Length: 204
Image (cartoon, rainbow, N blue to C red; front, side, top):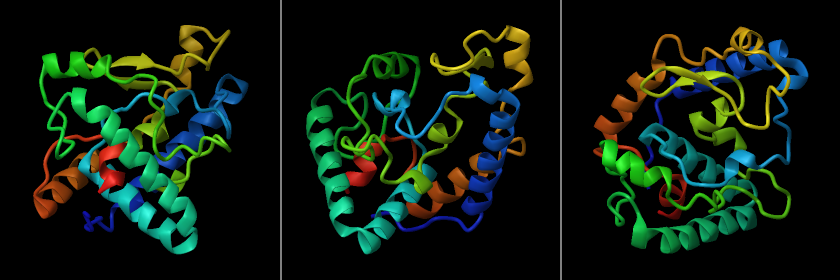
């Protein structure tokens, strides 16, 4: 199991959560993300090695406080890996995703109905919420992404808002690129490079 989590990761989490709180304040009822909404918890998504070590630390902490819940998370992760491995768009043994346009195209249509292993199917909540990846912390509000730096939102949010109103609620998540520096630090320390998915890092 990976064990190196930079001390500055806590600062990154605080920056991201503060940015989300400010966006939620500006968005009001347009941002409908609430406890129990699982729209963004289905279909694997790419996570960094920094996300992976944070999740693993979160799972280790859950093992100490709620060992049965942690065991269920691990079991769901193992079942997901077994299901996803045959068609995994990357190295099915390490869980590292392939890079490049072709790989991204294959990943876009990959297992879109598969639930995240951290999602408790009974409560509809995340068992590793405090350790969740950065994508989970930015999904929902207006965030710029992709090659065209387009402003995207969750399809459930901002109904009735104009493009201008949505733009005024934009979430500026990490203006100083702290995450990029921490990812490089983790990859150098652990010797693992490239993106993976939640199931693989929790099944280790």
